[in-house]
Length: 406
Image (cartoon, rainbow, N blue to C red):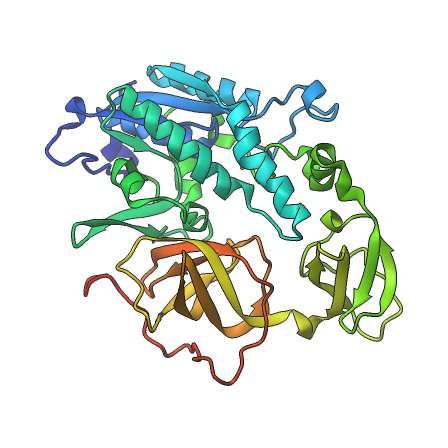
């Protein structure tokens, strides 16, 4: 494949200082989608010794998939593996496939089921990045003598004060930093993200210009092991006890209906709840210990004080008195001002500037004003309203930064 990147309006900076592209071996994580395919083609066109690598994580044959075949909008299936291989053939690079189905079941699916049974809402794609993709891909890349692992994520890697950091992508609609908060400093040393300065339309046009058949392929949104988006069926398949019926109660403890299992409910849900109230009702809490689903009015969802566990921090250590930052509690939400206070043992207390619907099991990811990701963790406790003796986070509070240029 002979392509002049300058004619495409793309610059790919040196991935390894002191080495030319011809001296650098790059492993590209390839999902079979347009982003990772374009990334592999860009690396090859820039002169790097490029290798494509794909993880097969889930068996999408009908026998293993509830009788259903793979649908558009899911990822990591066998036809995605075939797409990745075809792209590698098109651009003329070797392609490896790693079968990680067994490890994926233990590290991701079991966690998904356990989290729902505990009354929380999981993010399996983050667990997959944390426990499977970056661990296995980095290990295999290094075993092949690679100098760097490259992915098609929309994030920007910077070096500040000699320390690698992750910054939000220029295309805010495609930014994927939220899903990478578990990345460790050691992993970040070895990983690069060439698409952080591009938009999705630009990437599709690049893929088309480079002759890649996936340039029009739809994006993946659904969870790969949840056929048709029916997560309840997956949980019940692996944990039949999830169908244990119980009471739906109001916040003052009054039974108002029955449910067929707490896995059918998430905090903030409105559909499928008992009627007959003067105002719309929402799920405000799930209590696995008593098998209760608690409902209340919309204002009961607005909480601003919660704790986060398993904190992965990429910045300078948190001061004991805490610091101001910005946080996302959902991937598609804008980051809002907050105050963080360390609690020890990898936990922090978070106070939001404004109340929001907080869901245990989801992630809280923290940023500077300039979009540098400081770290993140898993929302642990049921939220509550701020009391009078806690510090207030407000829009005028300065956010901690790594250096003056951050």
